[in-house]
Image 1: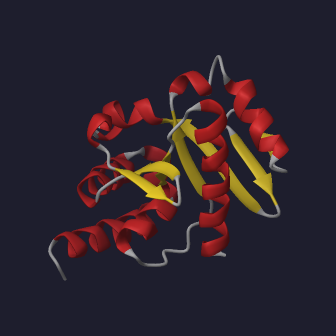
Image 2 (image 1 turned 90 degrees about the horizontal axis):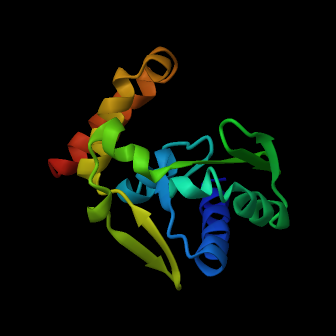
Length: 159
């Protein structure tokens, strides 16, 4: 399933690159899996894009996702579903106030001409540390977040 999630992300990203000029950020567990080279059992695909595409240009995202066979199931969370796979969009600009991530320094990854951002391990550590303090995540995802924080620290320390 992990390979399927990554392939779905790349297919969506190719459309975002070509049609809207968006270079999205592969976020969440799937992005961390790629950075660590470890299967973390990602539940979904989290994609960060510029805020303008979540507000005034949202129709463009809905159109692309519909063409790819996805159904919008939660407009508030900007979440789509296809064949049991959930893909959710959020604002890349929120990384600064949420976790102190400098979005101007996020490395770009290019896979066969498909371009996307992928946080480095230091930034993932900032994100998961901030997430572990968030009320909802602390109550529902705390164990997973703490395990991810430990994996990131081990990778940063070369263990």
